Amino acid sequence: MAEPESVTLQNPTARVLVVDDDRRVRELLVRVLAMSGYQVSEAAGTDAALALLGHSDEFALVVSDLNMPVRDGRELLREIRQHYPDTAVVMLTGNDDVVPAVECLKIGASDYLAKPVQVQEVRARIEKALSERNLSLEVRRLRDNYHRDLVRQVRDLSRKNQAMFLEQVQMAVTMLEAKDPYTRGHSDRVAGYAVATGRMLQLDESLLDQLQLGGELHDIGKIGTRDAVLHKMGPLTDDEFAEMRRHTVEGESMLSVLRDEHPAVLHIVRWHHERMDGTGFPDGLSGAQIPLAARIVSVADAFDAMTSTRAYRKFQSTESSIDELRRNAGKQFDPEVLAAFEAAYAELGAAHR
Image 1 (cartoon, helix red, strand yellow):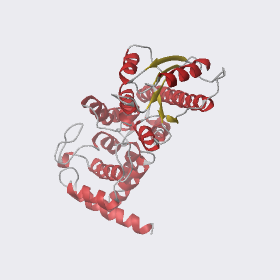
Image 2 (cartoon, rainbow, N blue to C red; image 1 turned 180 degrees about the vertical axis):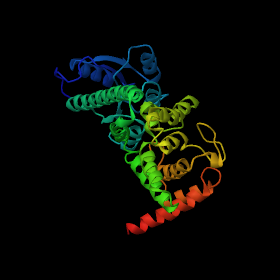
Image 3 (cartoon, one colour; image 1 turned 90 degrees about the horizontal axis):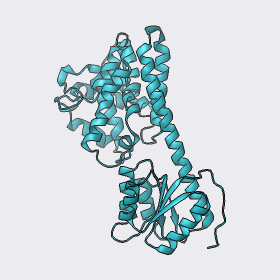
Image 4 (cartoon, rainbow, N blue to C red; image 1 turned 60 degrees about the horizontal axis):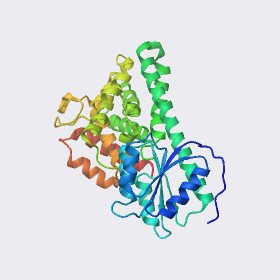
């Protein structure tokens, strides 16, 4: 490997931590990155890296070897994703470590570099990872500002401004889903299933319109939920689950201006996670206490979630998903609504053959 030359990059002064048990590789990377203008620290293993992460100002990026003794790079990656979600991670792997490298990408690594590393490739991959991190932070900042502005505007809206308000919240849903390929299009599909089910139940046009809007906006409260919770691949902690549950109440609050004209929309947003047996949230309603519109969207939402790939699991087939809905009829889902959904779905499928 040729001696690195000094170069100016787009992310100067970013703090980078290099983790590798091989001193020669570590020193080489430190030298390359320091000459590129980064503030570089180093650690010989996972425990030393975590100590630095815990007692220093935030590192923008960690470059870590995959194969290290005692606790390998995957363990370090998981710890960083859990405790330092704003820190990007690039893994170092051997040429034959493609499968573990891909596994690291699934866990949350930004990229990986194969050893022996090449100076220009190191610079390019590090700069790319930092640029993507900066973009993600900027999108979050804009989204948080948008959320605050939206909530403030809701308090002052009059009924004549509802059309403008609806355009804003629908844009917010689009922004929320655009960040996550796993949920892209989810709200539109839920709305479509809900309206088709409502037609099968012979509901009037006014309620069908509210099913459409409620399906589109049922998850609007998630705009205030942290990315680390929304996109977590493993089980949620009790605190994280509590944060996730709040999206129903927060969504209803955001849409309170619609209460007089579109009450069923608020019913959907607040109660689409209630269950027929009373074990749902946020209010533990049961049976007919749950408004019909919310019972309809509950089925549509669950079906689309099961038939779509999510960060924490792969999609299920249509047949398997419907079987799962049937197994929970009477406990989670309204049997009459489920029967109407199945008939509507069969009709939709026939129309597209």
